Length: 249
Ligand code: SF4
Image (cartoon, rainbow, N blue to C red):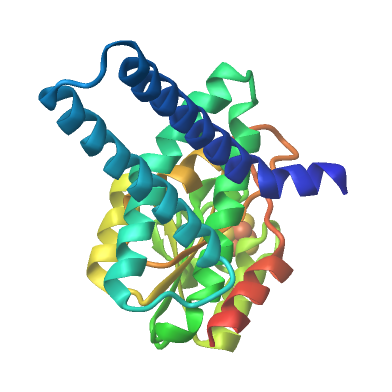
């Protein structure tokens, strides 16, 4: 339970604490300069610009936190907060995680959880006619004679890996499902199919890269399980994928 709780709040804590440190550093420097010698015109301009940046950083972070529970309107505001999450706060959390010796996977998992909360809370505003389920190649049984690259319907349903159950579920919910053997194929599938929503299965690193890469599309991230080590005969919770698909239908 404690691990799950941390996997949810770690990323927000890292971002919030880095913003707090930036704010302290700013006010300490600005007030220190002011009380020592007063501020010249150029210093006043620089500190004012920095103050505006700090306000934007804090306000947009608060907007991101609000977007985990409430739909954000107008749409440009949501786009802006998502851009900030993937291009600014991600790096702040990474730097803070590095400094505070956090395991990369733990804060990445928290980042993915935060992303999922945002995707779910904004789900009412997107059309869900076109859902794409993206799967990693490592889900496939290593001895399978069929090399699935793209359409999951090539699977012969032998049941030796999770692909067969996923194929069945995708047919039940009328969802397109595809296996991506790498980032380039995933990008091509997204470009060709222009999905409204993506449900993506992968490991921490690939999911984090994928979510950030396709930040303009809502991507619900589902972590795979790796009982045989990384990238080899991985597994996934079919219930979690089903949960996500049902939320979007
Ligand atoms: S379930 Fe499908 S993908 Fe998996 S091993 Fe059997 S035929 Fe291959």
